[in-house]
Length: 457
Image 1 (cartoon, rainbow, N blue to C red):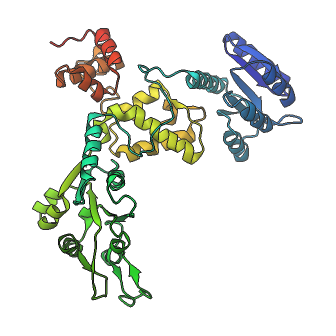
Image 2: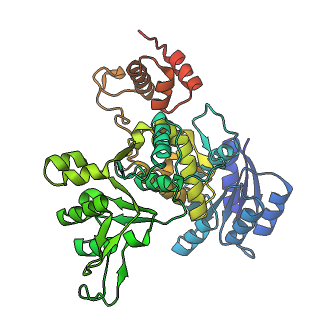
Image 3: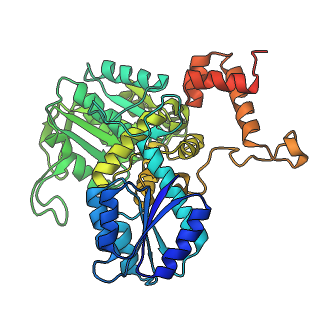
């Protein structure tokens, strides 16, 4: 039976809420002011506190701060008749899990309390390896790249092999898949890890500025060149120069880069002295360079110079087995950077995250988690804090003439049964591969097979 402490100097409100929540089966304690409430909290356990803001003496915001300091896991819901921006901001920034205006809509308060109870129990639960709920755990390593799917493990092996030579590397993959992270990992694993790593976005600058950024310029080379400028090829020394979005290079810049790769020579803009370089070049693109070569939009000789070694960063939809660890990694970083205290992700929220196809890949996932961490009022990321359109293909049921009920819509159980059967058939009932695609554990897959009566034939 949940225990709720209701704090308000209005006795009528306390009586009304006490009557309502006793009928719901809750144990209710009331307090007329902040001092009495704090004494109660120190003396006995509660599952939630509902407090008014404006009270004689110590106000509700002060009470909220004291509760947060001494009992950080006790959820507090603030209610007030003063519906102004400052009160809302103060309450939410102070750590309230929700804010309910007066006159109280009892349905809103019910929802706020139910959410607080769910988050409090979810945050305290131990991690069950077969449970869809994710409870954040500290990480031992410091690598910015995580992933236990087969495609990511293969990528890690390729990084280890590629880093042993100074050959040029082309990293291909969709936007947001972490191509710069791969480039940095190659640099860190190489023999020249102590040398600089520098990045140039080939699409971010007009041609003249890009040329100066890469090769440098001499004084007076162009209007505004009041002094000499060292380019990144020179500054990086024998380190690594990362050329992002290399497909966007102009034809003229493609020719100049080819000269550097072939002869290891270049000249500053406006200069005549030939410079040499020992830099290692790693480039990346989300475009199909082979198609651009065929269309005459990219030099074929430069293409083959860039792709001496080629790596591919897999899209997030192909590495669903990575989701728990990846989300854990991202939320730990978000907690640190935004000073949040998110403890995990509820099962329903994890289902929505893993069902989405993530066209923006890891960058999109990180942005969604960052927004959820900011908007979430409790300690667990819930579906309420996720975008309403976050879903995978067919997640809305879709039109299905074979669906039960004759309305062209499928139940969630039917969708799950058919999807698991499809994956098992696709993998020829290789359960390890099926678990990797579905993003679930082998025990859970076995339970679903038994639940739906699935057989290999």
